[in-house]
Amino acid sequence: MKGPNKTARGVALGLGYAFLYVPILSLMVFSFNDSAMVTTWSGFSLRWYGQLMQDDALLSAAWLSFRIAVLTATAAAVLGTWAGYVLARMRRFRGLTLYVGMLSAPLVIPEVVLGISLLLMFVELRGALGFPAENGMFTIWIGHVTLCMAFVSVVIQSRVRDLDRSLEEAALDLGATPARVFFSITLPLIAPAVVSGWLLAFTLSLDDVVIASFLSGPGSTTLPMEVFSRVRLGLKPEVNALATLFILAVGTCVIVANRMQWRKEARK
Picture 1 (cartoon, one colour):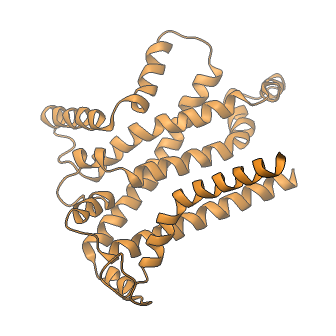
Picture 2 (cartoon, helix red, strand yellow; picture 1 turned 180 degrees about the vertical axis):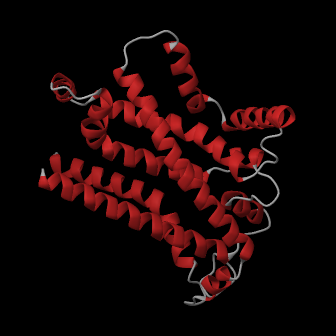
């Protein structure tokens, strides 16, 4: 019975991977297609990569999305680490329920509602303080940080709860300050979780279209917004070429990060 069961599990696993990755592979393959029809193969060509380099609107949107994603991931990693550590280590305090509710709200609130609420907040701030002067990169960044830090805090909280508290307690007994314990002991131990949270926040920010649609302004069109507007008029091979470059870049970063983590674990 073990043979058929093993075969069935292998077939199911293969079908699952095919469902997930065949569309991505087909997109990458057709980015090298000579035809303007994105579903008809007519020969190998790099013409769409050349045209992509001349598409200023698409490149500008991609560069804006990349900058916002990096800034969002960095801010979300810092704030999410702090929030997750507080939830995992701090005892019950006054306002804990409100704190947890506010931190968890972006996880359950639809992005449409979150985008509208942030837009109304910026409108009121602009009327009262004159800041921000207009919607753009800054407002999109604030919206993405609000969303992403909640996800990072969940990752960090679960990792901190699994740590051996005796290491921190021993350092405190030896005279280390709480800040020294955190930066010298706790932070190195949760570093893989922080990196994972950073990558998660980067992906969420780079992929977001709903919040960015509400908080963007003139000259601040992100890549998902640009692609979404073009898809309504028909797919173009330049989008396949740009998506292939992003997939290769992100895949390379993930592979390098995994190899570094494996080597670190092997040394231990």
